[in-house]
Length: 549
Image (cartoon, rainbow, N blue to C red; front, side, top):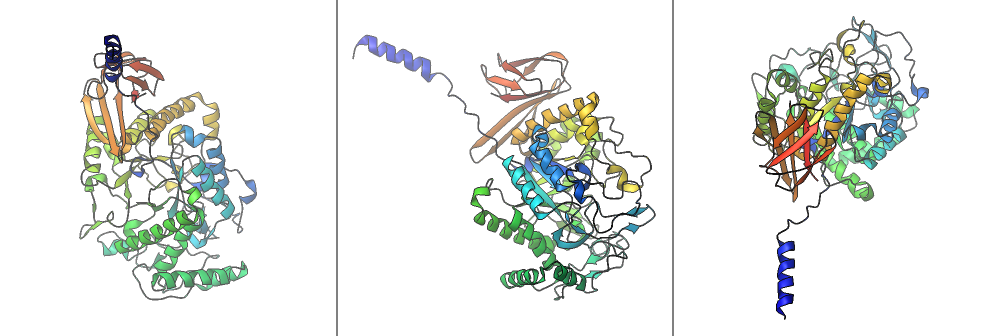
């Protein structure tokens, strides 16, 4: 071999072998622990079908915001098709319960109230026609999955709907109607009714019970009695469970997994039911999800298991795995829930610095709660003390919610500053006005707020490191930090800066990026090359969201 050829080969090797290998940007996996979830009241989001607005004679005048207003499953599907959720970075949607509700209404000093919210079940096997049909639900799930969005329904096992002139009480061996819970102990939180006239399902009982006569009559009139009885026989034969109240309801709820392929359940009133019930529920949910995947291999999104997130009222991330009733501590995570709703964030966000908030959450989630998660929120349908009640801090709300470790729950209208103070309402009705689409379409201030939520939401969706990773501060002044995430060969690393100067920003990213790395600021849309460990970002914003190109 000639000297010239050897020299050329050495030169080629020198040039090519010293270059960094090209980094192939991996598609971000979906991770429940860092999900960006959107929570909506089905009746209050978008009305795409006016023909289903009135059913069961629900025509009486109600208290303000206490009747059905027309929102439906089709409305959610339409907004998915329009790209609303994709632009918001949402990768999971939680709907309030859609099962058939009591037909009548109640009046408890707030004016007549119909079950628009979905938490007053009368028949778990049927979808309330005010919300839509089984075909509507199937289309919702299919369209959501086509857009890489998961669907969570809301499971109520603890209670039936109130008793009205149209809705008789369930049999005594199914429910108790007293005493009312006083929350002074574990027993007085579980074996009791949440409020007066909200019959409590006897979830502790293993005694076999017959079906309520009203369900038998209803199914017979609808021509599906034989079908339902046959399905129940098959369920109890397969499982060996006694025909006790909770197992009927577990069967009915897991049927929505088998038939429609929903991805998870948010579970209502968890601490008002015996802890072992949720282990039984999880087991049957997993069986149903595995069966759905086996029967519909072409519709399987990934290898994630079925997701269960529980509402243990007043649970906070600081408690770790143990919720304290005063006389007893209960671990709802192991063998039951993937995560719990975190009631602490609204207080932590108001009282702590960004670093105090982010580091504490990261430490807990990567410590005591490793392998599990929390679902953070700042406002909801039944929390009368939201972080920003008068919507004066919508930008701060987005930044604190969407950048906090854990999964995030956007309550419908958070992203558009939908008012939470509605004159003339009583109680939680003020939190449940119809989605403010007009403001989104026509109000520049609302549009600017939405744009901020969209930028943060899409960055969170595209980077599991934000919600499911490890937090590490880089500099306090300016406030700069990174998040890192590794799992099954996938690696994710981002740098975020908050409360930065407007205009030119010199950011020390040497701990994360190398000289010559090209990075992209997803907030301003600008590309930067790292030089001497510094990323220089020139933007009219005080926030940067840096990712490697």
